[in-house]
Structure formats: C-alpha cells, structure tokens
Image (cartoon, rainbow, N blue to C red; front, side, top):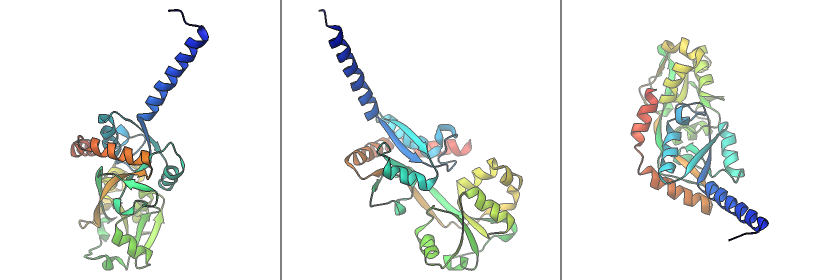
Length: 250
C-alpha cells in the first residue's frame, strides 16, 4: 500500500520517540561519590557497591547510570535534579527522611580508628576518646553514638575533605587517630602514593566503632518508590558477598 511521504515520516518519528521513551524509562540515574573500593568512577564496575546496585537493576531489565560528585553535592543533585532518582551509598540511620526512601541493604561498612603503630588508642567506650583529637571527613556520617557526642562537643573533632587527608594528618601527628572504613583504609594504603610509602606506620584499632548497613536512597516520589521496589526485588537475585569478595581482592 502506498503511503504519503509526510505521513510515513511522521509515523517513523513517532516510532523513534516511542523507542527512546521506552529506553529512557528503563534507565536509572543515581548520584554517588568517590569512595573506593565501594564506589568510584575509575574503579572496575565503578566499585563493589556500584556493581551490586547495577546488577540488581540489570536482572530486572534496567540500565544504571551513575553520576559521580563530591558527597555533599551528590546529596544536592539527588534533591534538585529530576533526572536523578536518588543517591548511594548511605547509612540507613542517616538517610534524609524528608525527601528520600531507603532500599534494602546493598552492603555494609565497618568503621574504626586508624592511628600510628606506636600510638594505638586503647579504648573501651566512646568516653575514653574524649581526650584525643580525632579526624573525620566533613559531611560523612559515622555511627549515631559517635556523631551525637561530636555534635554535643563531647569529642574533639578535626575535619578533612577526604579519608586520605585524614590519614596523612595521623602520620603528621596533627590528629591522634582518624575515623575510617576498614576497607577504605586498606585500599588507600595500596593506592595513595604518600600513604603507600608509610603504610607500615599506620594500623587500624582492633575495636570497631561500629558496622553500618549501606543502602540506596530514592526520591520520595511515585517513581522513586517504584524504583525502590524494583531494586529490592533485584537484590534478592544478587550474590552480594561474591561481588564484594571479588572487588576487595583486586
């Protein structure tokens, strides 16, 4: 059957638009930060946690795009940019309930104190840490108890922009210890040029501050709630332990 060129082109354009809309509907955009080995733009699979989230969406038929920003900007972009469905990784105790909903767990983070070998802090309770200056990353949550004491001024806190800078301050004697995730600590001793040279001088305390679950926070919208349900279903089909073991051995 013969069709007028204008009508044919119109139908073709409509078909292309429908295809593009379908593709867009199956693409999820999340904000994240540079936090290797968990997340990072240049890491294999964008990091262990990124791979868990990406694989969970993949098995549900969705493609994940991750946009990397400094942490505080990642939070703002997730709030303001309607293309971004949420952000990760977050601790469930610190998600912003006014604007986001959290997913099921996509991993965990164990926090401890890194210090010089000869200056390890022997502590039993957080009150034992009050006499020391402790380094933390500005904008990062730690544990609820630690952050509450810091906010009340019951702990002496020194802020840095990155974990690497905190550990350098430990080496320089500017802080007694730094709060850091145990896997981040090991990763930085391998890849940071300054820390690698002096890695024998740094050690993690055997006592942990705590272990936090990691979650994805979705915008509290109809779309965000739907994507959260989809991710949670996908997570049931992902062997998270295997993903993390593979990344942490790399």
